[in-house]
Amino acid sequence: MKLPVNKFAFAAITATALSLSVAGTAFADTYNSTQPTMLAANTMDKAEEAVSDTWITSKVKSSFLADDGLSALDIKVETNKGVVSLSGVVKTEAERDLAVAKAKEIKGVQAVSADGLKAAD
Image 1 (cartoon, rainbow, N blue to C red):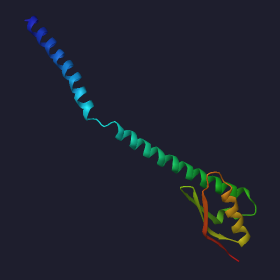
Image 2: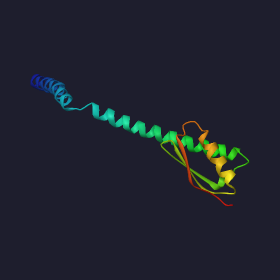
Image 3: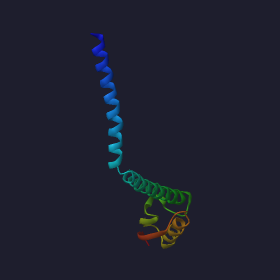
Image 4: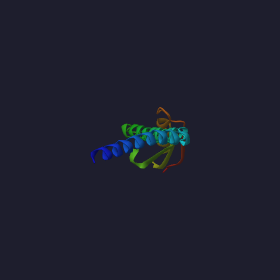
């Protein structure tokens, strides 16, 4: 009685092993390996861009805070693809110009838009 069970078990294991190796080859032919790579690359580009924009915004804000001539808390800073947008109300036109100049000094800044930054005087 032991003999038929052993033969059956051996046959089942062999059949399973052979079918897995054949199935793996069949699935490999239908798998498109470029799609996941492209998705990962696009995701990485977006992540790097977001990190860069966040980094630029942080650097602009910190440079404003470090300058006594600026009302840093009154200036809102947003960055999109390296373009810094300033908005809010500052005391003078000179302070507005200083904020624009400070923002342009930051590495990675492509342009500065200060249309939303108004002088109170």
